[in-house]
Length: 115
Length: 112
Image (tube, rainbow over all chains, first blue to last red; front, side, top):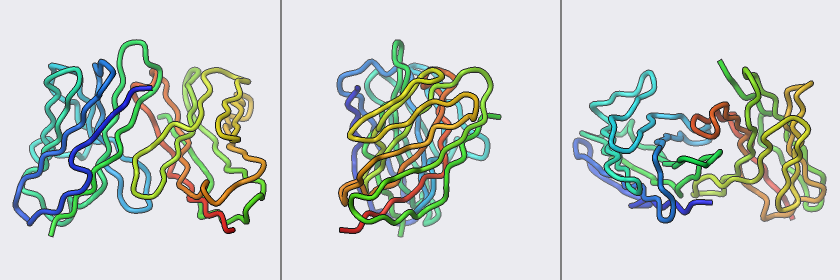
């Protein structure tokens, strides 16, 4: 399967700042990337789906102006949490898929803590 | 819409015990079914999958059989180890992995 990395693995920031999380597909042409959010002891909640070179499609209830997603290449997608607040603290996980793949490949996750 | 229901945890077992985690699904068509495992502080890893009825996915001693008649995909392992302690997610995809629906997850604790 594909190898997916996320950076940073952990980030702590002050309320009101913006945080960028990178998701890289190291050996796979990721035409589609997904961003999930996971609350403690809960399942994954899909936030948005992005296709390379296109605007992301956000799930209902997810603020697109708060969670900015850029999928500029087949190997990189970024999620920017703008003006972060404590309620944005969570575990953010990306996954990738593409032509010929019948599953998603997940990154290791990024834990965001907003003070 | 499509959905996945799995048994609530936590499940606590002694080492070498038999494990079953139930999973049932609702979906149109013929989805692919997956089990993912999440170890503490990590992302998800694909444990096994099945893409059509009666297929059995297996990996690391874990097995699950795609049962269309009962819309189930129960996870089993004959003898669990402490290292199997993790959260297990059942999932389905009707779009070749492009949109995956996850169950709520079942936390497994294995005691030595």
